Amino acid sequence: MPEAEGSVLAFDFGTKRIGVAVGTQLAAGRLGSARALTTIADEANDARFAAIAGLIAEWQPVLLLVGRPLHEDGTSHEMTARCERFANRLRGRFRLPVEDVDERYSSLAADAELRQRGLSWQQRKAELDAEAALIILQSWFDAHAHKQATA
Image (cartoon, rainbow, N blue to C red; front, side, top):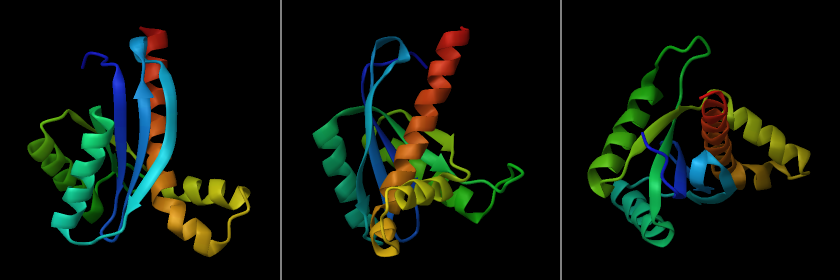
């Protein structure tokens, strides 16, 4: 895929919540900025996609990323298929490129980061999904930067 300059939205999909992060892809694959954005805490698909449509209208992303959960050994499980369906729905509704990103351990890493910042369990729970989306986004940027450096 050619490198496009602009916003990138990353999603940590869950059955109860979807974490969202935003970053900026600069020319030559360089990362401009990335941050946890929000958590969509509605379980109804219509409400979820309405919230996502609002974020897409606001940020005008050139790419969407969806975390792809896998077992430790890299094999798929039930949530893998759900995330793939979510990615396909994003692709179909918004006509934007969508890539999946291995998200193994993203929630654990997010919780550790929030704990290190001194947040209580209640505070961590409120921010966990958006922070996991940030980790997914950062891992994609890191992988792309490595690919560019070795190309």
